[in-house]
Amino acid sequence: MAMEYSEKVMEHFAHPHNVGVIEDADAVGEVGNAKCGDIMRMYLKIENDVIVDVKFQTFGCASAIATSSIATDMIKGKPVSEALALTNQAVVEALDGLPAVKVHCSVLAEQAVKAALADYYRKQGREVDFCDCDTCEGGCCGHE
Amino acid sequence: MFVYADNAATTAMSPVAIQTMERALESMYGNPSSLHQKGREANLAMIDARRAMAERLGAEERELYFTGCGTEADNWAIRSAARLGAEKGKRHLITTAIEHHAVLHTMAALEREGYEVTYLPVSPEGLVTAEQVAAAIREDTCLVSVMYANNEIGTIMPIPAIGKVCRERGVLFHTDAVQAAAHLPINVVEQDIDMLSLSGHKFHGPKGTGALYCRKGIRLAPFIEGGAQERGKRAGTEALPAILAMSAAFCEACDHMEENMARVTALRDKLIEGLRTIPKCRLNGHPTQRLPGNVSFCFEGIEGESLLLRLDMAGICASSGSACTSGSLDPSHVLLALGLPHEIAHGSLRLSLCEYNTEEEVDYMLQQVPQVVATLREMSPVWYKMTH
Ligand SMILES: Cc1ncc(COP(=O)(O)O)c(C=O)c1O
View 1 (spheres, rainbow over the protein chains, first blue to last red):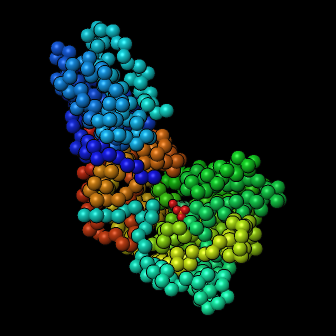
View 2 (cartoon, rainbow over the protein chains, first blue to last red):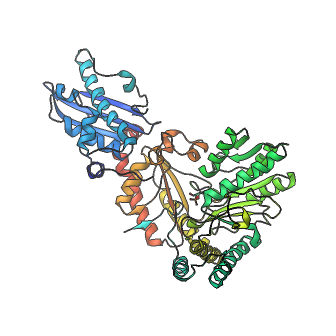
View 3 (tube, each protein chain N blue to C red):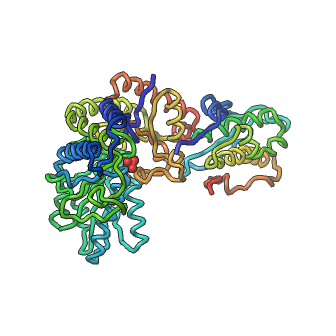
C-alpha cells in the first residue's frame, strides 16, 4: 500500500535542515536502534540555557528524517525549558500530519531532543526528571 | 529522466496486449457460454488463447485453468493438494522460507486447520536443494511447493531436480512461477511439474489475470461454486478481454524469450557490476542463477524507504524490502531468511528490469543510485560510526 506523506514531510525529507555533527557539542542524545530501522542522534550547543545550535544525524525512513529536521528547527534558538516542552503531537502538526504507522517517528524525535537535554542536565549535575532512560538505551522507541 | 525499474512488482502492458484487449472490449462481448454466434466467437477465441498458453508451457489445453491472479492460482493449487492429501490421511506440506505471501499465508491457514508445514531454510544465496526436499518428504507428505524464482532476490530454484525427487517419491509438486513464466523456459512435462501458478501482469499482460496449470489426473477442488466455467471448478463468466490479452502477452514474451533474456541479462549485469563499486554493499540472491531482470542490493548504514523515495524524486521507480516499505516492524522475510541481520536488511533496494529498459536508463541509474546512497549516508549516524 502506498503511503501518503504531506508536502511538508517531503520538503523536509528532500532538504532536511540542521543535518550534521557538532564536534564540540555541549550535549548529545541518541535514541532508537538499527534493528528497528531508525536511529536519531542530536547534538546541542547550549549557552546560558539557550540552544544556540543544533544538528542531527538520522538513519531511517523519510518521516524519521523529516521529524528530525523539523524538531531541530523547533528547538533552535529556544531556551532549554521550552525545548523540554516539545511534544510529538507538535512535531506531527508542524509537518501537517503523519501517516498513522509513522507517528512513532515523531515520538522518536521528541525522545531524541529529551535525551540530548538529559545529557546536558547530567553534565551540569542537575537532576533529570523528564527522560525515560529505557528509550535512550536503545529500546524500540515508539514501536508499539 | 524517468526509469521504471519495478517490473517484478508489475509491468506495463505490451502494445500487442493492449490492442488485443481493446479489440475484445469493443467487439468480443459475447459470453463464451452462449450458444449463439457471439458466444461461439468468444468461446473460440478463449480456446485459442488457452491452447496457445498451454502449448508454450508444454501442457495440454485442458490442463490450464484461468484465474483472477497469481495469488488465486497459488491458493487453489495448495488447497486442492491439501484436500486430496487429507482424504488419504496425509496432512504434511513442504515449502520454503522465502515463498511469496500468497503461498506462505495459505500454508499458515492450513496449519491453523491442523495441517503440518515444513519450511525449508535457504542458503545465503536463496537456494534450496533437491536433497533438502528429499530429506523432508515423509509418509504423510501431500505437497511440495517451491517457487520457480524469488520475487525479491531473483534466485532461480533447481526446479527440474526438485520435480524429479517429488515424482520419484509420489508427492505432488507445485511451483509458484509468477516471476518466471514468460521469462524463463518452462516445460511442465520435462520438469516434472504437477501444478504451476502464473500471473498475467508480470509479463506485460493485464492485472487481474492468472492461470493454474494442473496436470491431468490430479483432481482440483472446485474453487468457486456456480456455473460450468473452467471445467466446473472455477465458476463465473470469464474476463475474456483480459484473458485474451494475457495470452497475447504470454505468447509474445515466450516467442521472443531468448533475445529478451540475452538483452535483459546484459542490462542486469551491467547494473550489478556498476552498483557493486559502492562501498559496503551486498548483492542479494544468487550471482548467476537469477532472474534476467533482478538486481537486489543491501547498502549498509541507510534505510530502504528513504532510498526509494529519494530515487523516486530522481525519476526512478524501484522497491525495497525494508520494514518501512512493508508497513510492518520487520524487514522482508526473504532477506531475513538469507541470514541478513535486521540492520542490513533495512537497507535493501530492488531494481527489476524488463526488455523495455534501455542502456541509457541503466547508465542513469548507475549515476543516481550511488549519489543517493552517499547523500543518505552523509546524514546517517550508523554510517558515521562505521567510518569514524
Ligand atoms: C512470486 C510471486 N507469487 C505470487 C504473486 C502474486 O501474484 P498476483 O499479484 O497476480 O496475485 C507475486 C506477485 O505479486 C509473486 O511475485
